[in-house]
Image 1 (cartoon, rainbow, N blue to C red):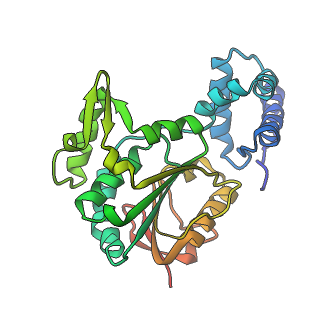
Image 2 (spheres, helix red, strand yellow; image 1 turned 135 degrees about the vertical axis):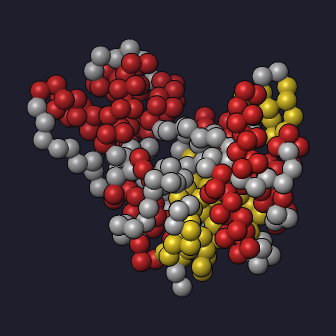
Length: 283
């Protein structure tokens, strides 16, 4: 894995980056979680947030705690990984999937979908609902992967704060939902839990785009707003995994600020819906 490239600096910032580089190496050696290929500006910001949370004055202080206190490392994962999403985020993307990708999926007797970097699972449950409404979910298996164990537990539970549901419902209708989102969840106390019938079609697993290999052949990969946190080498590695996982003429969906245009695997894909970042693997 190529290492983070640190530009020349001076004073306290230079020392911070030296310690940051040591921290990333230490995390990899101790926990086999590889953040060395993440975009430097993002890593700096997140490590500073973790330092503030754990009351550490120096990166070396944070490193000591992470190495010697596994529970602290588990808590720090919420800072080292980005866990920001919502159901049916960017509704136009989901409309694009229904128009471009779903007809392709319908040609298969069994369907496999990979949501890479699934965070707390909002996109997984969104896809399951739309696949259900398209009559495809019964033959679909959705692989949902992330490196954050706590995020995976939340994703598998499918329970979200009630105050978020109104926004989810607006997105659902804008995404072309055919019913009411309330048909798919039950509310209790401050949480809304989504239908366990949808859960039967999901597999949640720990998988790192930085270190792990392809684990299944799929017809569609959705990896949105993950690559923007990677440097170019790690972006290329991730897209290479997607290319190898996709079947002949399979589809890849990216986030609104992500593109394959200048990557190492650009020639392996063609844009089907450039506005919504939906690509198709070339023959």
